Length: 146
Image (cartoon, rainbow, N blue to C red; front, top):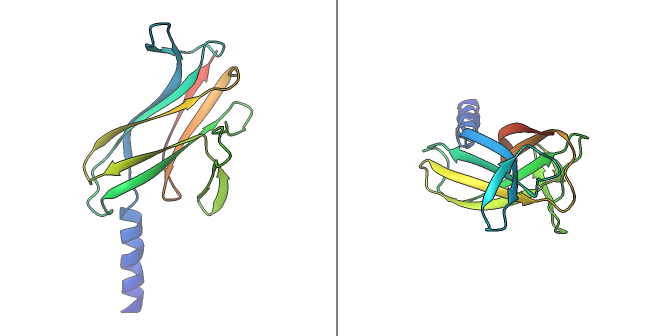
């Protein structure tokens, strides 16, 4: 009976992990009129935008969920958030995040975008964007800058 209870707890924990669909990430620059425009040029990139859709999940509890975005540069370093408080726990270890966003999740599909402002000129190469919630990797994407 105890092993069945533990098995059910494990299944509930797996089922409560949020999943995403339609994730996209890329670099943006801002025109003089304030319009954000996608770019694949490192020298023009002023920010990184990652958008995704959270799927429906009846197992997880509704409420505020905090999503952490890690942007890994071509040289393997995490791009910093810029504030002093840029560490979180994921997959059993502590690491840096680039940006975070709190979302009011009500067990229904919802579109989410997270932005990161570049403080220095971006490098050319492939960037990896990872999204975490409750210490679990929810989704990831890549994009290239020339």
